[in-house]
Length: 512
Ligand code: UD1
Ligand code: CA
Image (cartoon, rainbow, N blue to C red; front, side, top):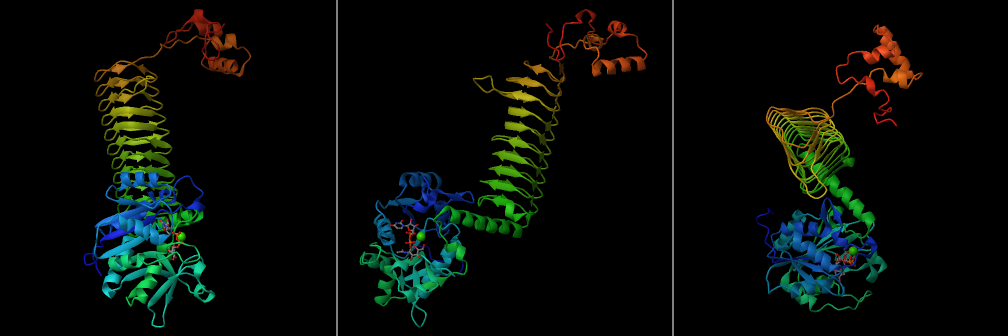
């Protein structure tokens, strides 16, 4: 049945009140995440594909955290509180108590089955409607059905009842078809059954499953939709299952993108969150994590070894060994290796950000380059700019952050300190090693560093007998100079200073 013809259910109820003891976690089980989404958000996303009139999540353990999460991420979702976990039947009673009188279909699903798709839920709703069943249950056949409720069918294959493992006979336990716990109910049959279930079972709980047996003994039709894909009905009970389901979800996500035209060199080390979007002809190298709302446009190459969170990558861009949080990388830009882009960074078309560069809230114009070893924070860099190696945008005075503007086609010399707030005009230059504290007008060359002095002959006089002194003497005799005294008298270009023989130690520190 096509999507449009699937009847719209009156309600979807997501059971999520259980404690999840085996997770051994301070975090409620359904708030653990796979593929960049919490388990309960996966359930809500699948349910939303049915466009139900009401979507109710039953919360209990850790309910404040779960309710807060849902209020923030899915505000249209209602919650119902189940204070004491008295069984799945009781949980559905709690949900129905929050809803008005309804007619039609109620879907019941779990908050801890992250691979269940909206498509499967639609097929379940359609199967119930097509067959006119009071309830249709989603089932799977497992090699090891241990722990699950078993689906009991009669000779003609119709479903008679579900029996919990703890209540089952040896013969019933041999049944391999299990109850997924996911159902589409006719709401009248559901209400009628829930009013009659009892705690007369080995666990003393109100079993939702008993509603099926009651409907059947009332002469109503009970059906099953058997699913071949066991992953979709598998729940998370512990962290081993969490990892297994995460890996399988990721395998499916990566396969989806490969079929959509993305080249993935190593699917096993490529992790793509479910909300990521990739265009055809993206290339993903090994060890790539694409998280959150990351988007990568066609022809871009990412990896190896990249983590991109909420990052947008333009067509044809190339990123290697990069960590990027909330950045926007323009088309044809190149980033990496060992580059860290932080929120608010926007790189223009063809921009280049090279090795060991960190950026935060930096807007970089088209074709501009920050190739080596720089920190660029709170900056606006125009087009066609070159930022020399080891430049630091000194944006923080210890109290406040200030902005730095670099105009189009400016060239900032290597090892420049740009002290914010400051503006480098269009086409201006700064000399290497400058500490720039004042605005530089367009086209000016700013020089802000000590004047160089050469103390001629210093090494031969003050470090006599050292390899450096020997090398200096050899160079001098090769070049036809006199003794060190003569050298000290030679005319030096930059600030030659004969009187200063003892003024400096090896590191240029004042010698004392
Ligand atoms: C239930 C089914 C079983 C099925 C299995 C599939 C019943 C009686 N049994 O068993 O047939 O094979 O699921 O996983 O329904 N929950 C609540 N409130 C409660 C109890 C449970 O919200 O009072 C929620 C849990 O958070 C969980 C889900 O319902 O998400 C299933 O509960 P769980 O205790 O795991 O059910 P099982 O006993 O495993
Ligand atoms: Ca379970």
